[in-house]
Image (cartoon, rainbow, N blue to C red; front, side):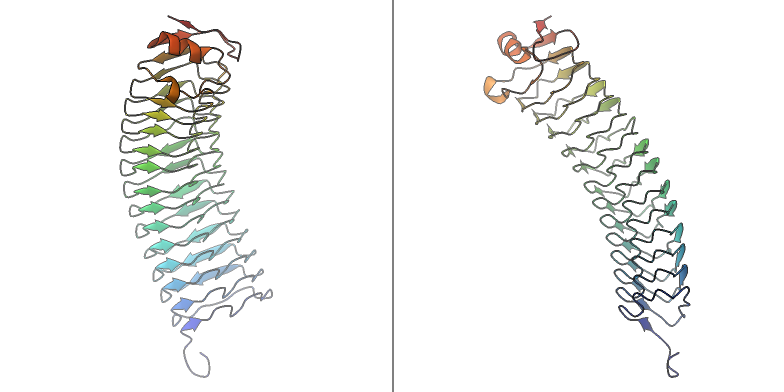
Length: 349
């Protein structure tokens, strides 16, 4: 109450930089918390947001570095951009059942947060919403999430597994980039496009099943996944983009479907464990340095003929005389001995 009147809102920047504030009780009369309302209240330790509040403004609790616990009431529908960003001591958060949107960077850099449950009403997870939550080991995604935006969980290097529900139709670029402890991911049939760098740098990811619903895989999607041993590209994918599987140093098996027509630059560069691969007859174009640094690649089967104009002069950079032997010999299997280098001599079987 202020002058006998109930407080219905906390205005933007109302308590900004109030470093002596250790606790606050928000009354049931409050319906909104404004932009930056408690930003930089570095001594604030816990907060309970009542069910009367429907909106948490952008940066409302940003950089409240002493905040350890947050309970978001069931009246809240929107968590604003960067609302709790930089709350480095935050270990637990309860998200209310009616939250529909989690804003950009909402919990970015909450390095002590260990687990999070996204309730079933949430449909949208904003860009970098939980990025760089270094201690985050467990994420439960509700069954209404439709969109996981760019970088949503990037840099969560303690996260070990993720199950993406059937409701998800969009996974943004870099969504799980540099989740270095991530060992398994389940991608539902509702997903049709894996964007660039989605799983780039996930160095513990040993296997992943890409559903046949996926028609496009972006640049660097699995680049630097150094534990990935095998991959089956679903039938329907038309191109293997630049650096899609580059530096997957444990990759030994790749299945390319007949739907693929072009393999772009450095798609498999640095796959030092890859020993053999079959190029289907649907492939009519291979760009530069596609297999550069594949020092164990001793067998390639070509099921179709690619013209000299569509076979880049450096398509097999570092693989000796393979390009010339294939253009002269045509369809078939070509072999050499390891380690493969620029001086390697290939023979048609």
